Length: 388
Image (cartoon, rainbow, N blue to C red; front, side, top):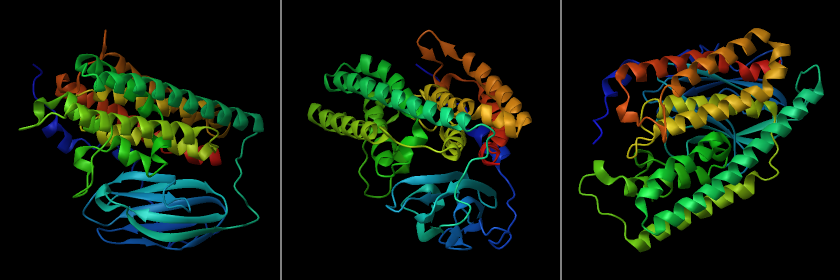
């Protein structure tokens, strides 16, 4: 029997992802080229300094003046597709989001408490003489980075479909021991491309919502609903799902994973999307994995942790030739910090995967948190480096 989770008191004082926090300069939303936008999020408002900017590299300076942790999104014209985002902006903190925005119609959204649809407003990017471009000495570097990343996402999505098919078959058949073994392995492929999956705003909550994320009355489906049924030990007075209920949840998960696979086929990327995605994956580590909150029932958080780091590193390494031209010191620092974090993860590997999260010591959790913080600050500079 595994011992109780030992990290709760430690997490109160650990500044997860604090190194990535920036003090954004509030210039009233004005800049020489009109592409700097101030965003002030409170508990019930999302004040955006301008609703219109010219196409090009747009910088959103996001400040949280509310009492809850917030998020900021730039959404596509369907209100579902996430173009770019910054998550986990604590009260009285500021963060910066840099995105190469082509002409079109969008929505901005703040999400106080990180729940619900967010406080939204129309946002327009107009045509300009400075349409989004990427400064790189060799365009071939950019083309190679985009092609390689697209192939990586498609490969992970294909593996996700195959592993999920195997997982749901075991779960529906009642082979719980085998399903529990496969659960973190299947989720690895989801976690490696999690920010791409999250860009489809309708799929992510159906597939990856935790019980604590639910709004009152919201139906709970996806990975973590099944996780609770496979690891019910922590649940009080839990009633196991019937075979029919198991089939319903399993089939729904498979349907959503298949839909994701269909949507990523032929998906186009930009270098700033890859860079912001790498940063976003590390934010996922900071907000859920290093805290032990993601896999509440199974405690398989380190599998997810490793997968998020894998995806972030692949994104960076694809862009590394570009960054070595624009900011060689940053490229060197990121290479070192990724290696430092990986060394700590390697120390937790076992013959069957990783140490369960509730078996980590407080010192081991602290070391992982420190390594995430050390990587987060330079990784937050990656987008600006590839757009400079």
